[in-house]
Image 1 (cartoon, rainbow, N blue to C red):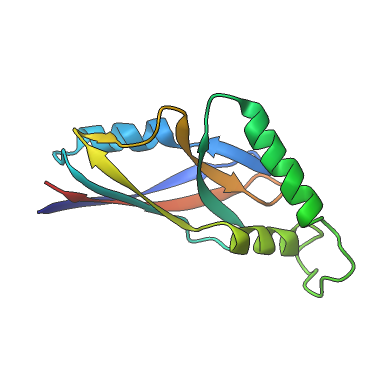
Image 2: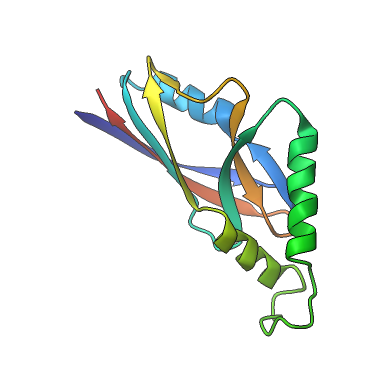
Length: 139
């Protein structure tokens, strides 16, 4: 059994999705591991990771629209407001989604479905640097 790990930085554009699939796939392909389990973790409380459809961008737009209705910016019911009107909604969005994902690796490739990609979902409205930890275990 072998393992490799790395840390990458992603420069987000503000609220929305950044496709990480090619970056992760290249990193896995450069390793000597052909079969195993890939894990990614984002150590931030206002961003999350998501596996979602990559074919129709309307899916991501609809997800963003749904979360905007579910968790609106600037809601006066939020007590935590010190970092701006988008901060507490970002924490709630992160709590409703996930900070870690795992995907099997088969023949040095992510075993994603035909229409799936891995996304960093930035919940803050302004651009942010985000760190991700990538870990691959296998043979």
